[in-house]
Length: 174
Ligand code: PRP
Ligand code: MG
Image 1 (cartoon, rainbow, N blue to C red):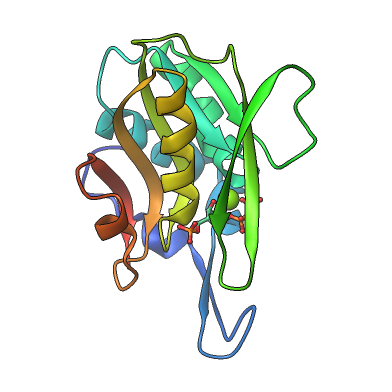
Image 2 (tube, rainbow, N blue to C red; image 1 turned 90 degrees about the vertical axis):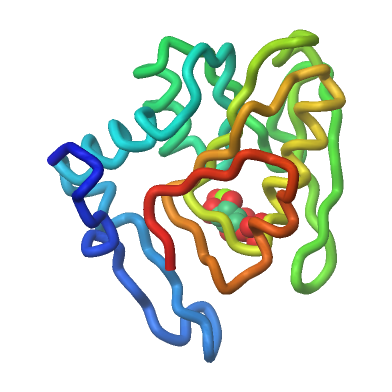
């Protein structure tokens, strides 16, 4: 499995009315468990990403699964953005809106040096809230966001609009 012509959407499990009525949940575990689809999708994402990147930033939890193998392939460092209370060293945090209430994510303050070229990776772009918050963290550390790379993009949600001005790239679009 390689080359841009492969349709990876056939490896995604679509769950109707999960976690609630009217939502179709795009389950990536069926892609991840298939050795050819997993390797092929990561290779494609690496090909989609800009070159000469210093750091790949992945967002807990599913962003780790996609981001770490990409960083490995690209010869870049990997930086975890984590849910509150998980990072042991000095960190900065940002709050972002959820459908009900807010959530927080954190990054180590020495994770990125000023001027470094960064890509932000996650499994899925929906409302863009998680990614926008991650951009905020990276830019406060002086990182330059070269692109945001997603395995799956939900195009009926305003994610791309929320990330206007940034280079948004995705492998599978719904
Ligand atoms: C999911 C998904 C993305 C985010 C996308 O993560 O993995 O990170 O939502 O949504 P958004 O574009 O509307 O912000 P979730 O917070 O459910 O947690 P997980 O990755 O830990 O499973
Ligand atoms: Mg996530």
